[in-house]
Image 1 (tube, rainbow, N blue to C red):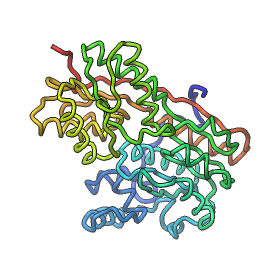
Image 2: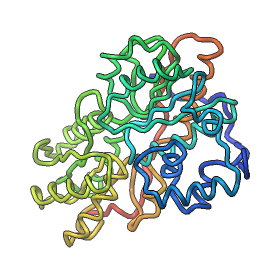
Image 3: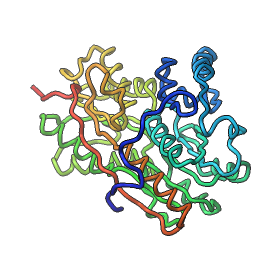
Image 4: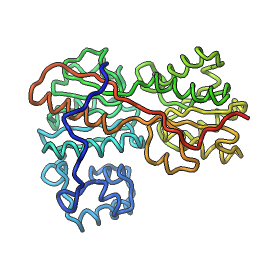
Length: 356
């Protein structure tokens, strides 16, 4: 994959205001709800309490908010809109990406519809269903299993973009992809922990099948441990879980009960890291004095947690800009798919300490 370059969009986006120009972020601020929660309310997602729905809609009605994907297109987005398929309702990284993408599409005068799926759902089968029922102009997939694409994507004829996974090997002419170098990022995490003296390192991860991003991050861990001659037993030192804090909490408990000698845990998402920190604290462990924790994604919540989370920060701005730019160009000129790697950085926090 090529490295990301500057996109079709500039970086000085104008601030949004009231009414038709109001953003989801504005509604979140005025209602006291999260951006992802507001998006779910506006898209009639069932996973929202009635009280929360009333709070959000009170702000919508007061300020006359009218998103492009709502109102005349909320017939659930008739033909011509761009479908954003989000795989996972509790992934905070995707909430940030949805906001960035919607803002870019508004700037470009494009209507969009957001569809939330369970993280284990078949996103390509759902896209085919939308093709039959809604006839969208294109698809932006936030997360995806390459096996699902390999098996089912063929009939999809509109321009598509997959974010956070690399689809280059699949060879589809209408499928571009933009992602982070997950293996290299994971290696940097293990390198950091090794420099601080950690040799008993656990991993808290998602679906570890070979076509999922969690697998690539795990491979980076394995590669770094082998290079640094750090012992790593997958069955003993790795615990799978879904992308949610409650699931991560339970998985972190299981991991530490099985391996009480662990001095550090690398969680393959910030959501998991935050759940793990709570679990360790409830088990009487201090973070980072007794056990260090590193996350992955760089979501804002992690920078306000206690302790502040050390994490790999994915560049959501570039992922969104490169992805939307690729789709808009495909609408105008068609052409070959684009596959790029966007940069990441290791953000130091307060959740990691040197072994004493």
